[in-house]
Structures are given as C-alpha cells and as structure tokens.
Amino acid sequence: MREILGRRRMTRWALRDAALVCATRWGWPVLPGVAPRESRRLTARQSGQPRGRCSCPRPDCVVPGAHPFDPELPAATTDERMVRWWWTNRPDAPVLLATGGRAPCALSLPAAAGARALEEFDRLGLRTGPVIASPTRCTLLVAPYGLEELGELLHAQDWVPSSLRFHSGGGYVALPPSRTGAGQLRWERPPIALGVGARGTLRGGGVPWLPRMEPLVDVLVRASAAVPETGSRLAY
Image (cartoon, rainbow, N blue to C red):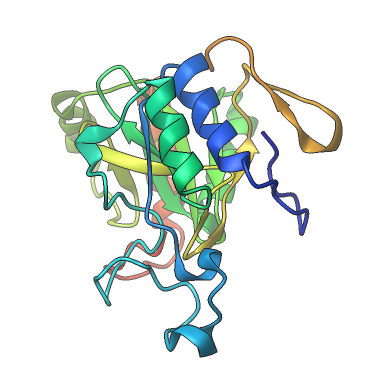
C-alpha cells in the first residue's frame, strides 16, 4: 500500500490494500467508514455543503468521514473475502479499526498536544508504537486495555482534559491512508513491523509491536493540558 506524502496521488486500491494488510497480516478487525463528501469528488459548490462534511445523513456529524455507517461497527472483521468485497465496491471508503478485544486500543489528543507528547517521549526514552497524524488529531495505538484498568489510571490523575480521548472496546479509529473530513491521515510513526520501501511503499511482515498505555498516560495528560481546549466537538 502507498501513503499519500504531500500531494502524491493515492492509487485506486490503496485503501483496500491497507485494509487487507491490517486484517490478514496483523489480525486487526476493520470495516469501511463513511467517505467524506470531498473524497467523493464533490466540491463545496456542487454539494451545497462546506468542504469536509460527511456523506452520512447527520448534518451535524462530529467525525465526518471517520465513523462506521453501513455496515455497523460490530461487523468489523479480519475475513479477507469480506474486506475485498467491501473495498472493491467502495474503494474510497476510509479504513476503520475496531478497537478493543484482541485488537489495538488507542489514545488520541489534539495535534499540537501530540507533537509535544512525542518530543517528551523521545526525551524520556519511552518507546511508542504506531502513531497516526491528521491535521487536527494525533492518535497512538497501544496494547489492548480494559475499562477497569483505564479507570484506575485516570483516578490517579488530578485532572484529565476532555481533549484526551480513549478508544477501547466498542470504539474505532481511522487508519492511514484514509482521508476524513479533517484531512489526510498518515503514519507519523509507522508500525515497526513495516519497512518503508521506494516511493513510500510500505511492506508488511509480522505483527506491529504495541506499547502498554500505562507509561504513556502521564505525558499525554500533561501535553493535553498544555494546549487550549477545542470544545466538545471531536474534530477528528
């Protein structure tokens, strides 16, 4: 699969290939998201809607192009035939990872806070796993965790900014090279099971290593608290 780097054009089957790598090589359950209007080649003038709006029926959608619609989230699968069928019929659909269970979980925060956190991790020598960047958010994939475990960690914090969000069982995150209403997604830090080949091609092999979330939470809380709140809208 090929990521979009700058304005590099994505091949027609890049999203399908990315979904197949996640499902069949890594064992991550995926499903297609709702494409943003922009990816369906509708301009703001043609659609009568602002750029970045979602193609789902909700006019106030807070995660345009970055959520499941049809099929619903429980349909996420690692079955190769189903994945091929979905993206053959909807080649522009974002790739959504269903988090939790045996699949990765995630922690996400505003892009500016994410940049601060990554710098702090490097300074402290803390190893991160795959990190996804969009124009508005930064998402760290981590080893699966449960709500009880999460609750204990958050209880130990004096305050947790609402801009820091947790994606575990029943959640989902969009994966590169998807394009959502917020813009293009890319690997800020690629899965370590991948090697980067010529022209940005990613070569699969093995299952990506994922860190546990416990060592990361303190830094993420501090980084999120250091940037202004963005309000209640997710703005993914």
